[in-house]
Length: 569
Image (cartoon, rainbow, N blue to C red):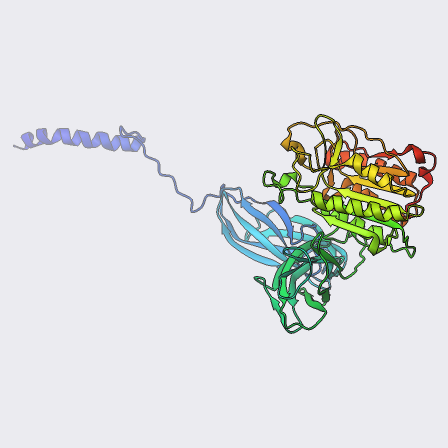
């Protein structure tokens, strides 16, 4: 029995011995398993901070920190590394110490910044009123808690001391809605130009209109305007609509215009006045001079041309000098087949201002000056006849000045040039004024000096589309001979158009005619006046309108040896 038990246990004992032997020798049939210890953090994943997209922003965009200006330095802090940047802070300082009048935020906390992420930063800067001219050298540092800082950023920005603004009314114009006289109980519009003529920018600009006299009524939507920010030299146009009732007892109507800005000290109040029964027929405007201000390198804004103001006044008058001044502008109102493009831009203004020069510079007495705007054929013929009869009765001393701004047109067959009244169609010249007839009528008066100023072309081109639109073709006009003591200044040659000078609100020809009269006070010979007009119109027309316009002068054979020495006044 013992032997049998031993036999049964023997395999088990042998197996145990073999296993014990393998363990002792370091051998095993099973695979060896190795366990690695996991670190608590990955020291290879570090943060890497950089500053980029940096820029300086200021209110007036002149790249200075100006006194009383809000500015800022902005940039991005970017972590281009894989690790977290801990407790990131932005520190701003000025390298050279404090800068007079400039304050800024010195410390900004960004917190933790994950890898491959960024945060935008804005550092507000304020230039106080006592800021002086200088240089602010900003040092921007981005600091990480463990020392993983970004490379610092340097900003150098110039500072500027306070520059005073000056808010004034640079120009003002009263006008009526339907033209004519300033009347009680009818709307009156005041248009002003508000301008900053100071050396600095203005903030919080406000304009307030007041009617200080009783029985004056405000008609518009508002009488106070917020213009806010105005840079130096900037101007804004405003309209104020009002009237005076029939209870009003004054002879003129005052309008108080109050100007203010954020400092409360650099706005100038003005009282503008318009007289009742003031005649605004031609331009529907009376120009009122605004507050004068002279600031270096700032052009004073204006609602009108330079030749419309400061018209010289000579003391000499000529009792036998007669002037007929015509400005035909609005053809479309009289002819329904025409559109507004057929009108002659600024023709009324040309005539209106020439009328003023005729009185002040050329010495024409008001009783001898005849003025028409948007004249019909009948009106033109009547005044031509009247002036010729007056001149005929004083022929030995008489002088005639004829000014016309409007459309001219030649007959398609005869090519004879015509002056076009506003009620005459370009397709039917039966009622038009033949230019040769006007020459002949005035020449037969025996006047000692006859001068024509024609700001019109006779090709049909006009100042814009002109009357050529009614014909679809331009015609070269016939050259009319002049006789008697006559000189004719014309705005253009041949098939050229007589063009506008938009910036000056005049015809190109009329502007330079008036400009020379203004500069010389009329003390200029006809030859020098002709040279000035020819040279300037031909050059400026190309420069401004990109079209040729060459003025001409026609001289009667009777005065060809003496006209050059004639003087204007």
